[in-house]
Image 1 (cartoon, rainbow, N blue to C red):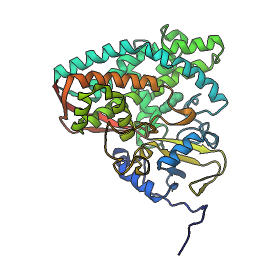
Image 2: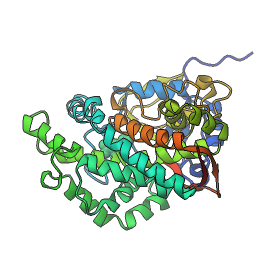
Image 3: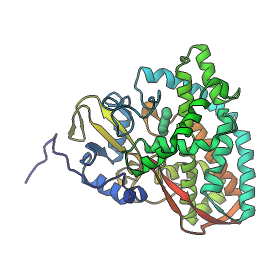
Length: 403
Ligand code: OVM
């Protein structure tokens, strides 16, 4: 009989490319193999460690002292490579610097400020839902998942009316840039210069309408909570992380519900389940699939030693389908399950600060449709939209019948 050593430097390797088209399109078999191979594996193609089990991903996200963000949340190590843009003060920072700006951003995007948006968000969701039900067939991506956030979010930030078409390309660029420099990143970079210029200009005080999130960030600078140099970078965080994520979240929710008609039925009978449907959709098909951390010291994870200065790829989307955490039916989309505790918004000090806005948007959209739509079905083949970090859809043709 052989016994396993308590701690090992021997790490199994995985040759598959998680940023290749095949796995980005359908990552779930790869996730299973990753989880079953070992708690920690090495991806020799990129020279990084990887984790796919819930407990290890969760613990690493919580352990910000050892799994740091200041060297970048992507593949690129900021200690060795020049970042593609000035680093985010939130996502790509550690305490104590992170703590101050996170507090200021949390004050701007608070349950109180977001509650004030509720009535306006609801009216616009209901108007759009009326129109879609009237149409009968529509694309859940272009006619809903992209349309609604772009109707409500830029106004909530207080962005100028022109140039808003730059928001989706900018998000696509930022999320592709967390991955390797592959053809997806090249394509995103190709037309990026004017997009980046617009974003930069839109973060300045004079571009932002009074009352919006953007202006409130500048008011935090007036109070001295943050500096005037930090304010535009915090506005940039809203523009980077606040649009594509919610577009994918709404698209993935609609895909999950449309491909599981019994679940739509459940939601239609009780539209108050919309919140739970969203969390379950986030668990089942997480918009943000991966983030990297960098080890600040040697660390042992479930018996495997990881050296200091290693990039570690955390598979949030895999953790959210780990049967060790979610049970044998982890792959089943079930809006009555308790999906709370998923890591689709991250976990710990970096957990999504925009969460109240994302939740409000999706709740309004799903509720408005749930009461109006009796049945929903796919009216054509959905088309995947590939991104190095985000998993979602370019097109989801739907047919609905009215209630
Ligand atoms: C940021 C940022 C960018 C991308 C993602 C993100 C999901 C944050 O600029 O702060 O969190």
